[in-house]
Length: 145
Image 1 (cartoon, helix red, strand yellow):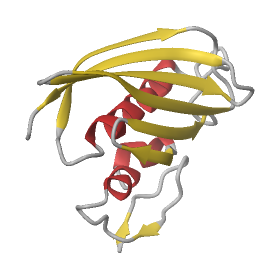
Image 2 (image 1 turned 30 degrees about the vertical axis):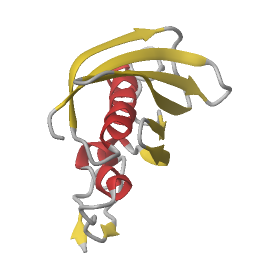
Image 3 (image 1 turned 180 degrees about the vertical axis):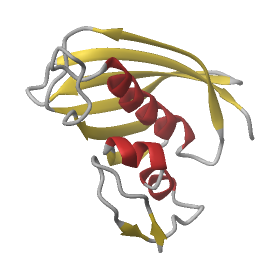
Image 4 (image 1 turned 45 degrees about the vertical axis):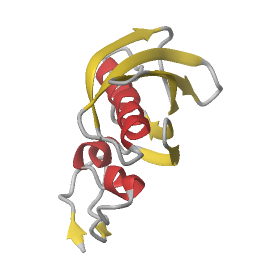
């Protein structure tokens, strides 16, 4: 069992070490994602759905901090691009914030293009009523066969 440090967002939880062959468990055990309270609800090669509550991640205006929204989108992108046996690293990312985000957020990452060296993903971030609050585009470079 691995013990994660206690923090105000995620209390200490005992979890088994993630098996190296299970990408969902590996990403669920990620310290930064746990710090922000992210949870993977669906994942497969080229696709990921990740949720996060905005509580404790607000800017001075009462909306989700842009860095928290970006981190959620980036996490979904990382899972979707690294779910299979091939490993990728991000080489280009762009995010467009459309509306102030509040409540529970859902990021859905989908592969939209693929070539011999890079894959491109679109991540749509929606709030609980289903409004699109941000669009994220990322290109991932293949680093292993």
